[in-house]
Length: 315
Image (cartoon, rainbow, N blue to C red; front, side):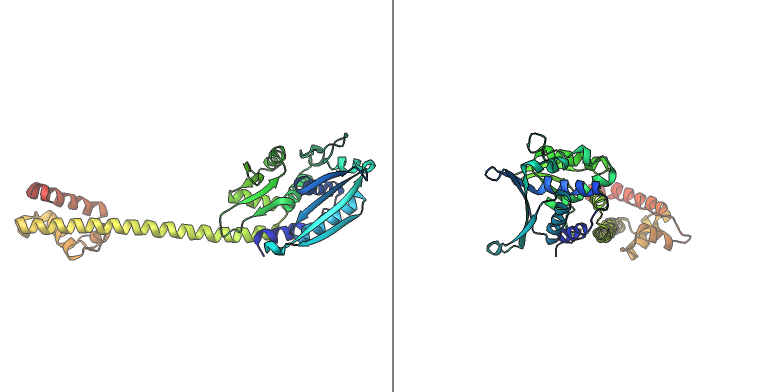
């Protein structure tokens, strides 16, 4: 099972205790994932929500039955031709004189027209904001497994809906962006910290822990890789510098002889020829008395300056 489905299963098991929160969550579910059509012959409105997540379908069924007081049915379709999971369709019919129930969820106005805005009256409390967002994610949300690229998104029915949901997230301290794609309007989060905050706000504590554990492992692995890369780069610099110094000293001795090198830098020259693989710090530790890295570097510069003076541009 995907990380996204596991997260939805966890969220779908949460049934809010307060009725205001139940209304907010059902509003989020239907506003983001529902479709609404008028059946003029029966003088009623038919709404339905389709999902591949069985737990989400059960939650919509329970909330709708409790809050809308209408018969609710669930149909299961097998998408064998596409080799996909089953699709669960939750459907109910709302008579025209019962449309006030849809108005209470902020889905229709008094004239019976569809409203796609997030209803302020249902989300003024923090607990209701959280429930609305949970419903929105259950309806049309997805989140990548933390081992891969960090990404959480909710596909919205319109730009204004996505912008309203983004503002709702902003009030809870979560930054989200909105993008228009061929598949529709998408609200998305790519920052790992913000995804963690969303999971916390929605109530997905188990998914949150799994996400954090993987994120910590990835962070440690990245730090180790950076350290290894840094050490490798430093080693390459040391080897290159050592090769250059050894080559310079060898050619200088061939030209003037070992005795032609001043005594103050002769010991360093001999030590470098005998230990081409050591760093300047390690060479300094072998001197009698020991020298600092800067002390060795100074003597190496004197050797190289002497070589340039005697050998000219051939070094």
